[in-house]
Length: 181
Image (tube, rainbow, N blue to C red; front, top):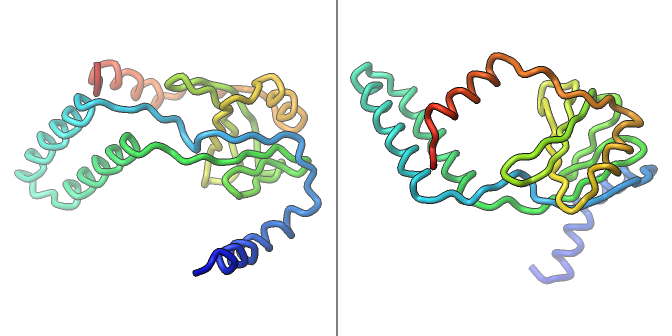
C-alpha cells in the first residue's frame, strides 16, 4: 500500500468520527500514556510463576482444568501488562463531554471524579453511569491538575467514594503477599 493510499484509508476511517465531533469545542487537550506503568524486575515474574505453579498443582489434584486455564491466562495477562509499555493516547475535555482514546463520553453519562497517584503517575479517575467501562482513568502527564479540576468541576462533582470491603481486602493481601520487594 502506498503512502497516499494509507493516508486516504486513514482519512476515510476517521470521517465518521470527525463528523460526530464537528460541533465540539475543545476546552483542554493533552497527551499521556494509556495506563500507569512500572517496569518490573525478575523477582516479580518469578513470584507470580511460583504462586501460579503451586495453585495449579493443587488444582490438578482437584481436576479443575478450567480453573488452571484461567489461572495461566491471568498470569500471562499480568506478564504482558508488566512487560509491554503502554502507548500514548490523547485526552480532550470538551463542551459535550470527555474524549479519550477516540471515544466520546458525554457529560450526562458521567457521575463524579477524583485525583490519585499510582507508581509516580498522577491521574484523574472519572466514574461513568454505564457498566462498561465503569471508570475512566486519564493520566495527567504534564497537564496541570488545577486546570483539569476546574473544567471537570463544571459538570461533575469531585468526590472519592468510600473504600469498600474488596478494596480493603486487596490492600491487605498486597501487604501480606508482596510480589516484589
